[in-house]
Image (tube, rainbow, N blue to C red):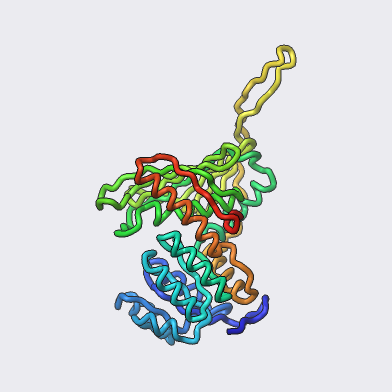
Length: 352
């Protein structure tokens, strides 16, 4: 299968498997017709198929995955429940397709490694839907951190909660935390070396509805992630506390995505006694202007660009494996009542 050179505007033919809550959004983005087109899509539910067929005249909608795999599409998007990701992504790679898989890549680290190796062996693009790595506000924060705006980062905490949607296989951490694990490591340019998690199952035995995850990075940096689908309000936020300044990112407030607080603690020297004093500093609040591009549109275009130029995606298979290693270590901690667990990354995965 040949691909156009980088910069080509030839629409890439994409097949979509899974037309649920998020799959319908992916169908929308890849159907725009400028950079990609979707000639065929698949879902097991008649209602989802009917809605897609009504919204996209000319789209072939089927309940047979094999029809998508054997079609002339160049790439396949997998947006089904995570338990089915491995089988579908593996089959797509076997059919010579480039593959976009929603997060998490899979629910088993060994299976994730098999997918990454198969994509490498077959010369195919494998990309994971870590959408927060493509969010313009996250990009802005990453550059601000790298430029030293916050100073040394001390700690971060993220909240990703709402009421529903309940899962019956993966818990709240596996369902929600991949976003924050990938985002925080992307912002810091580092990977956690230790994790701990505690949670509780209130609605279904063995499926934690709420999980509190803590990650330790180098230089005493810590990150805390609160995930829950049993919460009275929807919140998607990240707070970063730095040596110079502090930042808050809210993904549910389009008018105020990022707020920079010129607050901190300064160390001053009394030259009469040669003693150090800590003084609180409270300065101005700044709301920077951030590109309002839709993260999903940026992410989908990135996938199409990588199909054209054959370069590794930002959130490639190894990125998916890094998140899986953190999740699996956190799951072991969760099952042991919160005992910290070390996380080890092979050399080929160490760059976040």
